[in-house]
Image 1: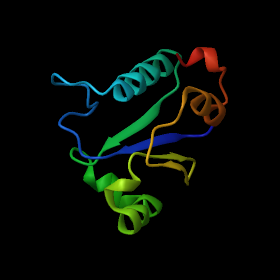
Image 2: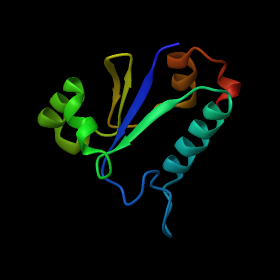
Image 3: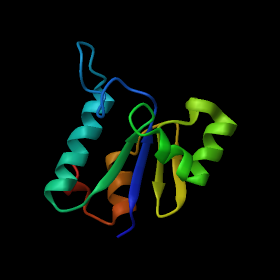
Length: 106
């Protein structure tokens, strides 16, 4: 199984699901990541506000931000390769990248 990391734009909290107007996509991502964690599959998640150094350390992500700005975020890295930019992975993509059944995601 490959290592997956999601680099997210600046948000008020680590998950982005605080406040009154919760983005349904962020809620979906938090649910997927919680389900994966319960199965022993860890996906790292870095928020530009709380973990800016992680964006600088990863050269591919650093280059993406220099080229596209924050419009390239969120971006998903599998192994050492950026596989998705500007959106979160679908449940099917999570399953494909992590080599797990799609029904274990949702």
